[in-house]
Image 1 (tube, rainbow, N blue to C red):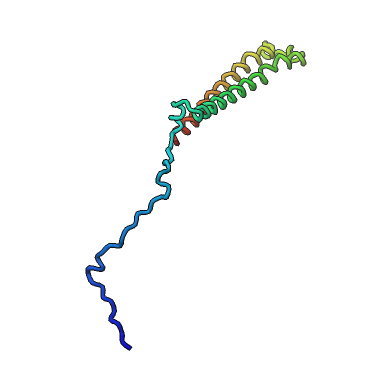
Image 2: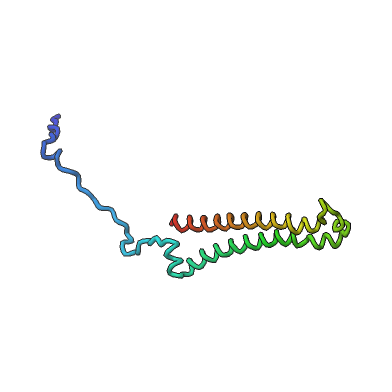
Length: 136
């Protein structure tokens, strides 16, 4: 049995880099996905921009209707309650009739509280909308 001599690695065979292959997508003609910001959609007045603005407007409208409903349900029902229970209309506290106390002091505090609530929630809605514009 004769043995073949082992191949020896020479300096020239070791220093040669392997052949590099470039891998590409088979869809080279397809358009690349373009990321469009929401702000540019709104500026361009596109349908998508309209959807975002309508969403903000709907959330602000829901907030306004909720505040008005709270005001109507509390202060709007005071005359009805005083009409249904006339004895409460005759009660006097510190020389002032209770209906006057309710319609002045209580109403003032409620209107201010609802105003503060409305402004804070409206600003929160706008901040969330602004954050949505910044994330894209």
